[in-house]
Length: 256
Ligand code: HEC
Image (cartoon, rainbow, N blue to C red; front, side, top):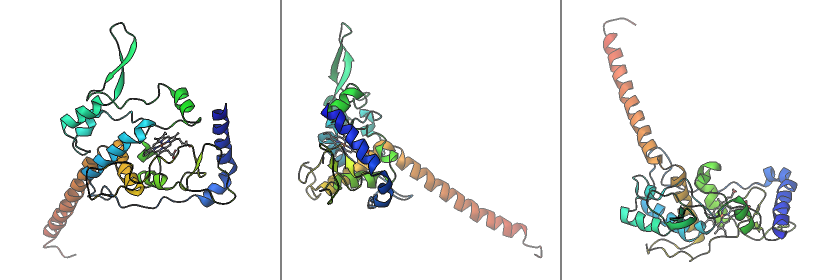
């Protein structure tokens, strides 16, 4: 009952503050991403670290149902080796049927997708104070400036300002529309042990890495798209030069 009440309180808080949101909405600060711009590519190490953050922290509550384990070894992504991707898959339990047709689970294989965390929406709501954790497959595309936004949400938890009441069980987050979020701060400094020695183990860095990983999850063909775009630009440039030269030649002996 308390859970339903909380969901209602959050909805109410959100709607009550709705007119103020437009005025107070805090733009997520723009970060520098390796995948920005026409030459942008993902940083493989960053994607691997981002996956580690997702695996060790976010996957406890959030699914990633549009991504298959085999995608983790595809070109243009984190590019884990086949053996690594297989080991990652085997670390997840996916739904299956036993010999008698009864539902059971088995270790994941490359062809499987990331499994759902909760068997259904009701269970997801019930386990999270009435607010289900959304699937993160397309989150980086579903929000404006998705990667900046995801990073901002990770670093945006703090005490509510004077006079702002956060419903019980919810949390204040500067960048969440309405400033109230049902997710507790998922990260703290030092929480994820990176293998790379020179990468800071801070919420800020974890947030950037997991945001980059989720950007890849939402747009796995980003690098191919950028390459195609570059190809088109080069082709059009050459075509323009060629057209200009032939124009000069055609009109060479004509007064104009
Ligand atoms: C203990 C469970 C839990 C964990 C762990 C968790 N989340 Fe969440 N998350 C939630 C819930 C619940 C919501 C729904 C919040 C709401 O609607 O108020 C949510 C919402 C979100 C949102 C959506 C915000 C929006 O605009 O709607 C993002 C993005 C997000 N989580 C990212 C992450 C990332 C990245 C991690 C890992 C670093 C993570 N979460 C870990 C429970 C969790």
